[in-house]
Amino acid sequence: MARSGPLGLYLGGCARVRGTGAGTAETSFYPVVSEALNAVGSALRPKVFPLLRRARRPPCRAARRRYARARRHLRRA
Image (cartoon, rainbow, N blue to C red):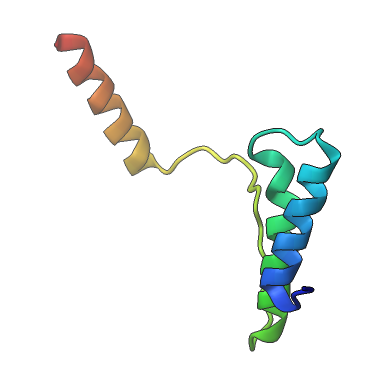
């Protein structure tokens, strides 16, 4: 039974990846998830698209301070 829509895209893509036998744990399915989310996003107004892998940016100052405090606290323990 063929499925259509985002769910069908996702399940079909998962079957293709698993069928190759060469897929790794999680990252092999990122393109499949992206396709399904693109299908959902294209139906929305305004249209949206997924961005699964963002560029790594340094955290904001507040986050750096919290991280530094937590590290100091762990060193004392």
